[in-house]
Image 1 (cartoon, rainbow, N blue to C red):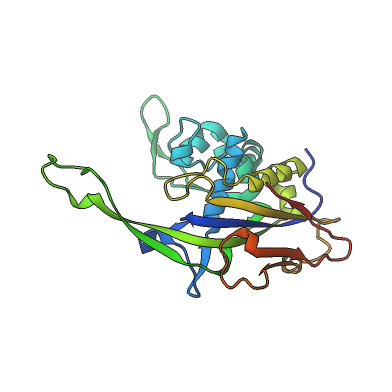
Image 2 (cartoon, helix red, strand yellow):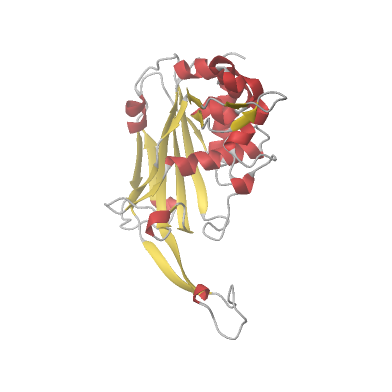
Length: 294
């Protein structure tokens, strides 16, 4: 397996219509917004979806969500101990085996930090010996920024009721029959990312892995529907993929990302769909993006 040799920059453009793409748990699960009213999806939310799509494709994932778990391990520690085994006691072996085993570790990196306060029977006379903790960080080559909407968004809040109480004898309705549901009317979002070959050398991330990330981004909303995000409410519009001709890259990621322009069409005051926007790129010399849509 040969590590990635060419720097990659990318931009994912997607739309949200009548959905809650990423609720804020500290604000009543209202869709995340900036102080200026622009919609936001956290990078953690985006990487969770990418991990799920890689998992759908049969890849081994270390950070599995509880409701998407494909193995028997209920925690990161139990998964690490079962699969890494004795390598947990050796930093070099842990890094090598973890990167080889899990695509999300060699892509995004991972901090293996587990307490060492568990008593363990060391021999037959039940002599207690305290285990050392583990604190090892792996830097991954794939970085992705939070997604922000191109224009400020409008959020609709809807009062909802349930037809049955969650508790009680049924003689009267409980307080849990009332609730609120929040959604973005419409928003066009973009997230920016890069893949660093220098860090790819350290984790073993290769061209095949880069293609898997590309595929996961294109299909990021597959199998992701829920009450808050109905099927079809989240749509990938375009994926821009720049592959440089060297490890360091011909241009900085910031300069590459700035070449993408997303603007409303003339005469459109408030966008209602993706068709109300135009996406263009100012191509840099010797660097033209691959433009994909799904």
